[in-house]
Length: 315
Image (cartoon, rainbow, N blue to C red; front, top):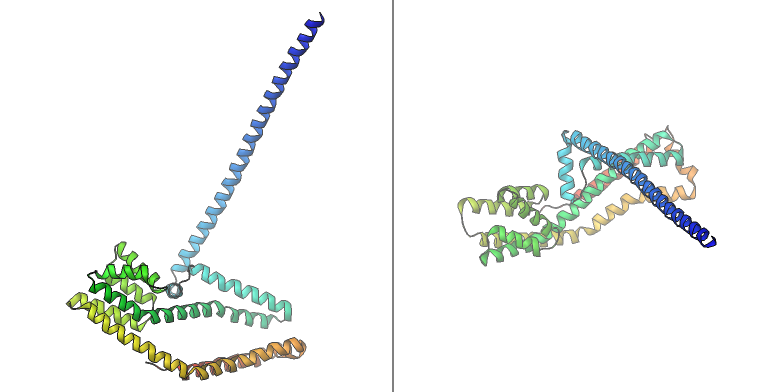
């Protein structure tokens, strides 16, 4: 009897163990199923939010693209090689205005000064784009003579013009390689070489490049020795770069003096603010904000512009 009782207890215990394991596994499956439902729902929410953001951005891009100024902004961004859209560029202006205006009103408590400095801060993105564009154009013009030499050597070895430009896109330095790679890509997408080169001239506002592209187009229409023409253009460009370098060296003192003199009032204003903020902040009061700071800013800009015009000599 004792053996039968122990066997019955063991059998019941075994059954209870299996039932418990089955319930635990079933419950774990229910939990996993519920978690999968929650994750799927959250993923759907995130997907819907991402889709709504993308649709909003696309709507803003479409609205901005219909404006007349959008083409000019897009051209400037392309010349500066900035991978942002026109909508993002305008958004940066708005964010700069809001941040500078809030910071100024927290420091000074003057709403007129905050609005004025906010509008001035909106010029910083445009200044950065112009500076990047000018630096990239200067680098491209400096490399253009060597680019003509590479094209000439490739044409003399039997390459076609497109193959020569593809070689420049592989072996040339940046930004020349980037621009010619884009030309080759546009031709591969169906544009004619003339259209692709016209787009290159539009992106790089260079007189030397315009001369080279014009020579290529004329040779394509009437024929001739393109390698000899490019060799002559490369020599002309190289001499122009040399003369511009000599002029820049001779006028560097005047240019540096103009920059230093233009920055002196700003540096003095910052120094006086650090030494005695109450004294310097009196000129930013509402009764003076449209007089002294505006006249000072206008004088600085006018003086800097005159000094720059003096040092600009056309070659």
